[in-house]
Image 1 (cartoon, one colour):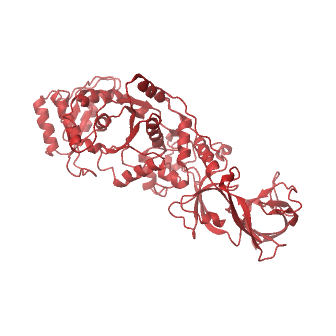
Image 2 (cartoon, one colour):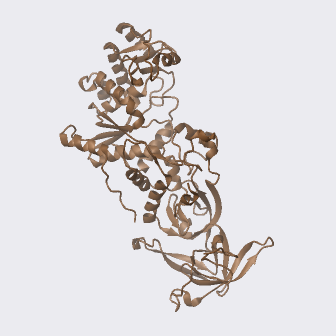
Length: 575
């Protein structure tokens, strides 16, 4: 059975425990804030599990907030996809919020910063700003517009809001320190002009807030206590705190009065940003841009291709929410970036499926076996357990006939050393049936084996006198009369190398796609597998773990996707 992950102490758990014990917070409030410009991938799963998990562990709550400050790249289908994926992983948000819910508050706060003399409207172009910004070893230079008066800045910013200027013509910037060692503090942009229709606010706003500004104020407005994010935001933390302190929402209720009037509960906080390492898996890429390129270039069959590491792709392949959550808990939380071998992920999914997936019979590369000492019309049913390790799964009746399909690989005319399955004149046990002996091998004109003719020892059948007679091999089968033809998609890792986006070898990640990552065969499955509803997971005995495709599967036209093999085959490849 799959074991529940033990609770491992880590630095975020410790911080939250100390904050609760000291009385700094009486309750914990976190959030998961993705941008709806693509579908979520396995890297996002860590942030989801951590934010929702820390809140749940401590009797707190977690918001889902859509960071929709970049119109033009954000689509309703991505919004729905994000909500579906969070639910699929097993989490429920207390409130669904959008950064766009706070646009009026952001604007008022920006006017406050201008009035305080810590923000100004700049006329420099984006390219000029980069030139003025300096480098890691050289300080930046002040913009020639940095010392505009408060009155002029307010006038220009209001005219930006009114739509008087074109895209890129003006930018509102924070006035901090162009010589700061942290480049993020060198007068970062607060607002830019973008005359693009927004999915929620339409054409109301010709200006949009920058991420660093909107993100921290959204956290504060929602009463977030702990803002958990990945390590790349560590250098942004001083700016996060600067905006929160300068705007001071807690002590300025007039700023967030529009939210109260709109019926949005608002109790501003001073959130604490805490960074953790990303989930990096070998044989994977997690760049949205690169994932989108795989889709757009037709290298995969869409965002939910079972080879993709998007959550919708993993779901379609049959990976389980419990397996993903087990992975996140096992890799732990730290500030040290590392790469987790993909086999660890597959192992977590196997462990969950081993405990919870019923067993079924399926033959992927069929070879006909005829039992000649049974009548040609012979039919019966055989009782088989649905799970060999858990009696609570019960039993099922599997149809059996005088002709069955076996795996072609379970027969060898010239067997290699150590081969324990069927050979000419050899014996093997048919699972649940008895011992058969290969008496004749039938070939076609090309010399290919197309049928085995065998005899069944009746004494080795269930209830016979020789059921304990030993043979070296046991193989599975599917009744040729009752088996249902099925499309079986044999998926494997999308990339053939551990670091596909490392271009030091002169190859692009597209060139590292594994040509064996998808193979489609027509096999046969027992009726109980074919009749299953879409998105039902099974272990095909001796084959691996499979799932009925959530889109294409029908009882009359079954489609199965291989989730993982029974064992790690990549270890033998040295991968």
